[in-house]
Image 1 (cartoon, rainbow, N blue to C red):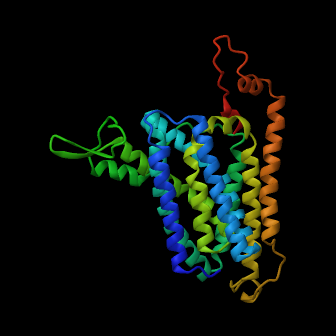
Image 2 (tube, rainbow, N blue to C red):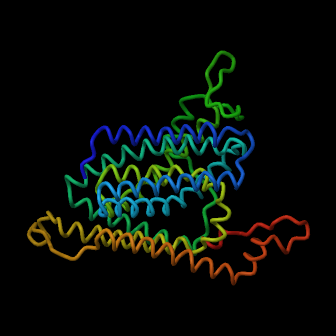
Length: 348
């Protein structure tokens, strides 16, 4: 897929424009964002991602269009796990509710920049060294097992600061309290960082750590940097508004871990088959290619959408049979009139 420089520039400019619009209008209110506002912006982002994929499909062909949608769905599904950690970061730093939406947006912008660098390095490396596909596939299998085990293990309620964040806090003085949405503040003639700045950096770096699992997954679907970067961008940009609806996701997608584990395992197998077809390892078939059948883009896209659909359907049916979830979702069973909170950790 040949992408001219001007198309990269136009695409990046369009994404920057969307982020600025979200920052100016979607985050302008001092009050916490409402569920209705979050749903509207979420619909806008999903619509933009779908429209972009349709343009790729019509202009570059079904192959690249299918690869974009496959990568987009995979990254979007895997990004749900990021939300759980973001929630813990917000709780750890006690971010005011009115500032959480802005912190998430700016943190995700940092994450996009870091992911772009990681993607470029990864694409160059995997194209130069085909055996890296085996390494990425092994990483996906390990991640698949860990994701599957999330269903039965106790959820972690603590978050450990990444080393770059700890280093930043040690190098620059940080205020104990938030100063609205300000990232720095001058006190007693000295410039201090605010917790808002630390939170934004923490979100960006933590997301990059997640990318070491999710980026290899999209490498198993496409090797086109343009499609990988745009799929990640559209998936991450909707995270802020998806975060606001996090409690609904926790309640409804109780079997998401199973679905994600299956998708990661499938992509891992696909990467191994692709690596065998490009084999250069001397101890495998004398360094010659091993011709094995490999799932094409339509099959990959069908498997991903099928697994997600089955996961959502099974979760919905299980929730319908769960009286605790039913009473929470309908707001019954509480004499105070407030909607009871479901302990969704048991579903993860």
